[in-house]
Length: 322
Image 1: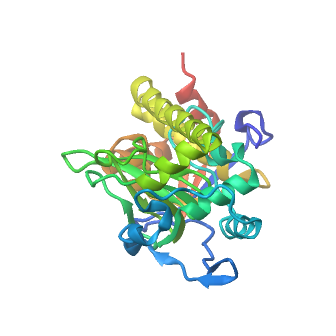
Image 2 (image 1 turned 135 degrees about the horizontal axis):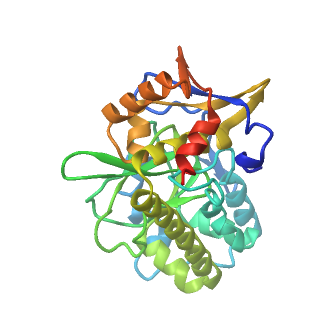
């Protein structure tokens, strides 16, 4: 993806879709179907039932081992049934969009057979839009690999205010930073659209890490990507004012989802003031006030469900002022 500041749209007008609904409305939906292993169809497990059935998973039983020499037919079926797609990129507060989706590729270190074995060792579960994948303060029992859909990960302060850490998409794992199953979740994850997720329990993870060194290295790659993500967010929160974070967020949306339409750039993503506030670390009231101020200065204009960025140069000026 070309960098926005070097694109032919730098002097153009940008449009961002805006919706009054509270929840994110993403453009595409997930088509979830049955998966077949060894020729037998297995219906998708609902998320709330999945983690209660570890005893039924032979890999998770005490003393069991992960079979790294499974038949090629099983590995191929598992890999095919859990093919990870890159239809959307992750999104978190960052100075640029470079590296936003780096963590989605952490399993690429593995061979196709190894990927099939890792994914088949987990449990395919289905989380409906709005359903919690994991909750802050809950007992930690493994990680989750997103196969389809998007999950918003956020932290809730004692005051009740939330800050969005990231929107994670297909290929990313969530549920960290803990991976050994000790302690509790530090934040929460909620499905913002119907999701297909591979749950790897604590016991399954431990066995895979011991028996498959390449998977251990792949997981380290994923943790490095996560560390960079949260370091980027911390840098933005610590070194950028909230108005600068708002300007950067609008520019990132334009770069990620912008489609040229004459002298405009259309953003195929709907956002609300609540969502913007949670991302930039502010309140909805402040975001509403600033959006009105941007309109007064003709930096943006709101037309129905569309936010039109009229002065892209003014957003950049906010970021790059002396």
